[in-house]
Image 1 (cartoon, one colour):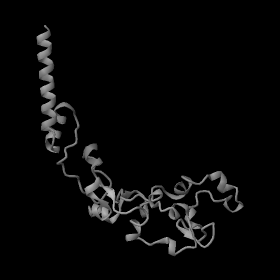
Image 2 (cartoon, helix red, strand yellow):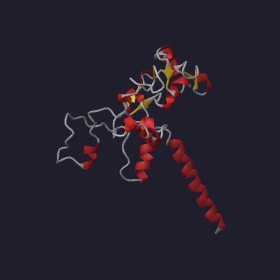
Image 3 (cartoon, helix red, strand yellow):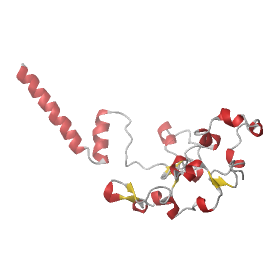
Image 4 (cartoon, one colour):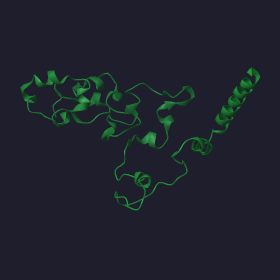
Length: 190
């Protein structure tokens, strides 16, 4: 009985190992997964292209989900989109940056130290990625958050509302009055 149980375990182990070996490509992985599970998306399936976001009622719900949105979901940093990783990263050393921030960013982008008398904290300390994603983001200018949420990640709303000028700001974007990079005074007013 023990020998039979041992043989079954050995066979199961061999089958599992074969699955891992054969599942190296997306096509093989799809074959294995679709054998065991229903509704596994085919990696080779073409996405339906249409000018309208309205799905034809005769089409299945699956086909309606494949319609591409008219607005891109992400905004890409140019070097990332062009797969020019080595513009910023030293690929020989596990994707280490070629230079520290902000010097790396200033290779292509403006150096705010020369433009403003007073710099915003993250800019002054050289942490561009405190606010910007270096690869891609859902927000314009590769911002990590939208509107007030970007500023409220570091600044306390209760402290902001102590200033009478801010009493009626509601959802006003902070950048309507303040420059996020720097200014001529401590309040970074536009």
